Structure formats: structure tokens, C-alpha cells
Image (cartoon, rainbow, N blue to C red; front, top):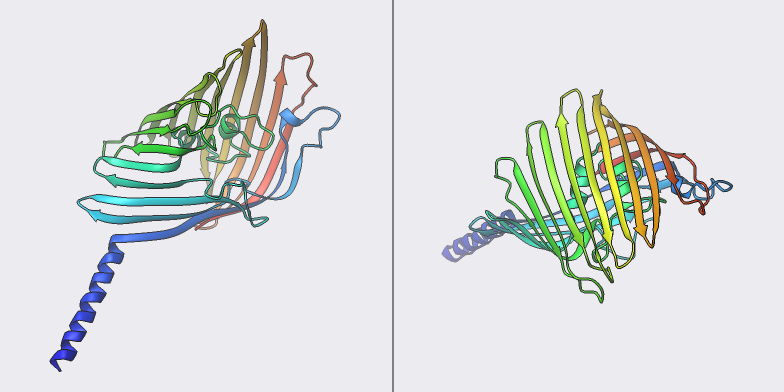
Length: 355
């Protein structure tokens, strides 16, 4: 009987130990699936004489947000220290394929978090991308956010921001640091991407901001050298938002400057937007411009991209919403040798689920 009681005690202790281990670590599966019926066109592709050639129609993934699948985990190491990891892959739910040849194309990192903040090693989204998506009413929408389209490109857009490693949104081979979350509303991030290529050198990005109550502001700077045979690209951006209750207002202004061996390129990008609660959803509006200028060899080339987006996002639940969005796009340039371009528009109606 004593041996049986000892065996039961040992089994109980093992169960308690296992439960304690599970309480100290966790792994979650999450992501977003976004499907929409769309008709997409970009004015930079709308050459007169063949305006329909570049239009995309049909059922497409990522009408408002690119679909992705993610795995994240934490382990409590004691003394306030935690190990963290995240693996995320973009996907196309309409075809069941990945969007790129790179499987973990969104985030793929391992890190440590504590009272000092958080340090990540691997591929992580840049401070510039995080600020661009946070300070506009359409978030990370590649189709309907003027800011995302003009900084990072979408269907038919010419992106302003260059790459570091494999992506202009998330830098591979990088170390990233985030300040702790108890700094009275202040926050900061620093990222360094090792070159690991035959050209260029390491790239760096940093941001600082403040968010408390209805006000949020941020300033971002990054310099990209990875992948540039000569020269580099400097980008800076200022962001702000204010929640009035009846509407949340957004503003962004930034510049992207390329300094290669010969010509110099500069983009000036700004965006104003608002999100107005209506019923169980919100009306979204954003207007943005990108002014491009190239100088070199005695020539000056200029072009301008203007985008106006309107939408309504209706929440069916905390995790599922339906939306309708429209974007008007106009492109113009001063190069007499190029074909004339015209204004065009895009529209999408879709459903999005977060899990």
C-alpha cells in the first residue's frame, strides 16, 4: 500500500511539474485570411491605347490585408527574462500558394525580452514599415492605402523604398531592438541589417515615438546600403494621429533620397487620412501624393502620383469584418518622350478573418 501511495505521489508531482512547464511556455497559431472581388488598375500602367491591359479582375487574396499564417511562442526563463520566437508566411488563400519563393516571408526571428526591452535576431519588419502602416486609416493595405502604395509599391506601383536583403518591408539578417513598454508612453526601435551580399554594406533603421491617450507621434529614419553597388538610400518620415472620438485623424510626411554614383533621385511623400466610426464599422478616407525628381547629366525628370482612397469597414464580430473600398489614382510626368498616362481607379469588396 505504501509503495502504491508513493507511486501515486510521484505521478502527481510529475503532473504538477508538467503543468508548471506548460505555464511557463506557450505557442500560438494565428494569422489573417482576406478574400475580395476586385478590379485593380494603377495609372502608371494605364497607357492610352491599351488601358485595360494592366487591369486585374476577379477573386484575389489580400484586398485589404495580405493573408498570412503565423506561429509565435514564449518561454519564461525566470528573473523577468523571456525567450520569444515568431515565424510568419504570406499566403494566397485564393490559390493555396505562398506569395513568394521565400516561405517565411513576413517575420522569422528569435529573441529575448526583459526589463531592458526586446532584442530580435532574424528577419523582422522595419520601423519604417511599422510606422507607415500604423499612421494611416487603411493600415497595411497594399491596394488602398496611398502611403503603403507610394512607399512600398503594390499592383503596378513603382516603390520608393529600396531593399535590404530580401524585402523592403522586413529586413533579413537583422538585429532589432525595441524599448520596454513602461516608459510613460515613449517608445523606440533600432534595427541593423548585415549586408551578407557582394554589394553595399549594412543597413540601419531607427524610430522614436510617443503614444498616450488620443495622441500618437513618431519619427523614423533609415539608410539602406545592402544591395546598392554604389551609394545608398536615405529615408525619413514624420507621423501623427489624434483620436477625437468622432473621428481619428492621421498625417504623414517623408522623403526618400537615392544617392548613386551618377543621378540623384528624390521622392517626397505625404498623406492625410481619417477614420470615422459609423455604426458597427468605420468610414475610411485617405489622400496621398508622391513627387519624384531625378537630376543628373544636365537633365531633370519629374513625375507625380496622386491617390485618393475611400472605404467602409464593417465588423461582423471581433475577428471578422467585411469591407468595400475605392481608390482613384492619377500619374503625370514631364518627359516628352514617354507615352501619355491617364487617371484610373480600383475597387474591391471583401471579407477578412483574423484567428
